[in-house]
Image 1 (cartoon, helix red, strand yellow):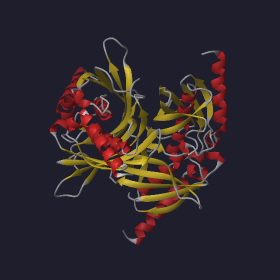
Image 2: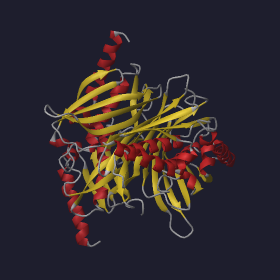
Image 3: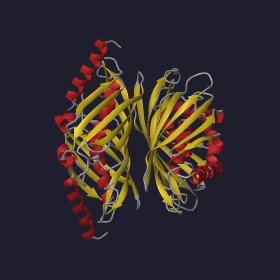
Image 4: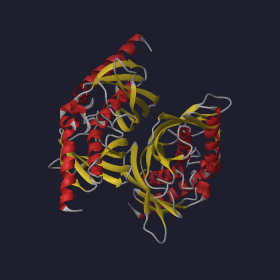
Length: 150
Length: 150
Length: 150
Length: 150
């Protein structure tokens, strides 16, 4: 893959990420874009909690879905797009921490369907990263407005 | 179940829901609380979108997880609480609409684990409700701080 | 849908079901084929158990996947076929009983992806059916050998 | 962990595996038992196929569930047992091959719930292993007959 192409997918992903209102709302930032792997980080916020003051399972899913989606974006044509078909999230430890890291990785690329896995961690300066959630999901590769309109 | 008890679980759920920062952030409101079934509604907002301007799959999951969680809350003791173990969401149609309805229903009550199913719809005054997503998930019944601390 | 077409999809499904070696192995029979809904039954057998002598979660999945797959087959063209993309199964009660019923239903038809839900029950002459498992899954509609070869 | 204990969990798992009628039926063998990781192998058989002659998604699930279950068995007390709560399987490539390897690994141990992940591969003498499926699931740790009776 040429430098040109690499830069292309990074720029494309940054632009797409910036269009996601939900990413701004949860305070998520793109930290790393590699072929087939993307990392997102976000700080804890009281505006993202469930009833015990922990990070909401749905917000964890939002970040994991985005990490997986953009990991898949690194592998598709510039004129293609992706829609999430489904995902499953396991909540492994309480979503407690100052900051969270979400990594998405492509498990199986494909021309029609891309399958990804991902993990979420509570991170801090002092302690080792703590695994809080995992995701496995699949996405459909769409071209033009196919699948986005209905 | 006495009127007293019914009122109790409704009030308990309203208080718990109000503590969820994430529900305020996504603009969700509790619309209906029945034994084993809860409905939540929210308006569309640009702050909740994915890259095509549709409602984000993760935000849909957030609302569906909450609807399922509170459906389960109607069936547990007043001093017990719930933590989501896992859920799977299928995205069935693009999350496009002015307003969305999310219904969670308990499929299998239990003393340790409660399993729920739920569905999300785009709703409007003019057109029939459109099914946009389904969820199936499980929750652990926790007592005291068990499971919430780690 | 004409009688001719209805008979067609029923015959097509019976032939396809008969080609599944796994259905013979688990002793499954097609009991009902309606548009978008299929029921399968099987007797308990010691050859299908997990370590406590209950029906194995994987065997339950095998029957639920088949019920969902054939529910979807009722809605596709005669020259199309289906491959399972993914499914999630929740085990709701121990798989104990003399006989089991598995029902698959199409939740969302589509030209590329079909989403189904299903439930499994322990059934007997004397007692009401007992819900033992639920499934939600998605399938890809394939034409020719697309997706089957790799 | 002492040699005694290690031998213990290996023997316990071999006995439990041998009680699974479903493992005999699908021709599965325990190949490797390490703490938190178990591998199972099985040959292809026409008795385990779906309608295109590929290994049935449900049979793949049966083997992956067993690999995950026994990976978790390596981490629990000798008098405890496990019941599958749920799992999700993604089918990544057609289940074609002479022989299959299924690996289950514990992602998150716990006193009540254990979460596992796993992968299935088509293997042969000549070609590299081909990833055909992934699983993520959760199990409940049960003591005595709790959870097994209902």
